[in-house]
Amino acid sequence: MRTVDLIHRKRDGEELAPEELQYLIEGYTRGEIPDYQISAFLMATFFSGMTDREVSAMTESMMHSGSIVDLSSIPGLKVDKHSTGGVGDKTSLIASPIAAAAGVVVPMISGRALGHTGGTLDKLESIPGFRTDLSIEEFKELLAQHKLAFIGQTPEITPADGKLYSLRDATATVESIPLIATSIMSKKLAVSLDAIVLDVKVGSGAFMKKQVEARRLAQMMVGIGRRLDKRVQALITDMNQPLGYAIGNALEVMEVSQTLQNSGPADLTRLSLELAARMIYLGKITKTLDEAREVAQARLLDGSGYRKLKDVIAAQGGNPQVLDRFELLPNATGAQDISSSRPGYVSAIDAELIGQASSMIGAGRNTKEDSIDPAVGVILEVKVGQKIDADTILCRIYHTSTDHLEEAAELVEDAFKISQQPPDERDLILEVVS
Image 1 (cartoon, rainbow, N blue to C red):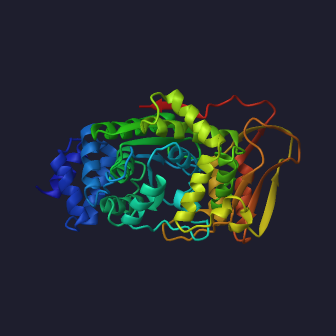
Image 2 (image 1 turned 90 degrees about the vertical axis):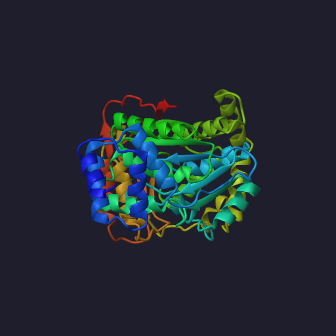
């Protein structure tokens, strides 16, 4: 078997056999196939795509490039939740403790921010002392005790994905839907899960800009899960405006606390409850999805989801009092208001521009090596559809440095569109793929 022959066949749109994909993944992980050949394979895949059989085979090969985390010793069904990333998306920190409080075991292998979309690990690490660099044994112990734990990707888990992800970034093949699907699902299924709930974002602040692309990705990931005997459901959700009001790591932790105390934004609360309900249903805590929705609502209202997150923060070395006393979190030293120049209706808030502005002042990173300022970000004061007067404050930029502040403010101003007529209402949950 020669690598060049496999590249040639993929370039010409042929289907590769599972053992051929395994040869490529194993050879690259061991360093036997050079970057330039795998780069050619990635570009061939970008243009030729992959069949269902290929994406399943590649996912399995990537899963088995490292250790499989065996959670069979922990009682209960294991259900993970994954979002493809969006601006202000902090649902993992709300849905997962609600589901865990309902009895689901939730092993969260989470990621960091890259570009304008936020990362769950970065939000958690804005909590003083919080550790995400757990060993696998520590992770399992916390899951057994609390039914919820957060960990980053370790060198033992899908090393092939770590190598391929860096190469995709350098070869302009990040947008390939089969490569996105295999990357996400290999990481998730490297843990012995029973089910996964996926939140596939679409819109200006998401990776997928068109609903048809989001649907293709959702269907591909659900298909991979099914062929590997996992229960998988995907929601396709709107990301044309930021989710909730807070964008930025410590600011989002504050909004998580408010939401788990049933005083959060309506859109964030609704989506988090729906994701939690599907985790509860797939975890077989209830027999129907409607019953699961009732349980999720109850765990929010009785405060058990809130207490669950506090317990996990304490167990992972953080100070749980940050959820009550926001001054214990990193706080910005300055704030700048952005106001409307005219009255009307907020017809659009471009999530990507808000995310870019927040990243520009230090809330995100452009490369994996960049450091993050956990205190900075943007707080919206209005949402799409709201009627405003001239000089209404649209949002506040929270900063610790004036570097790039003027450029960020210009981006934020451009993000808000004001019209004389109210915009059409847009659904938050656009489709369900299962």
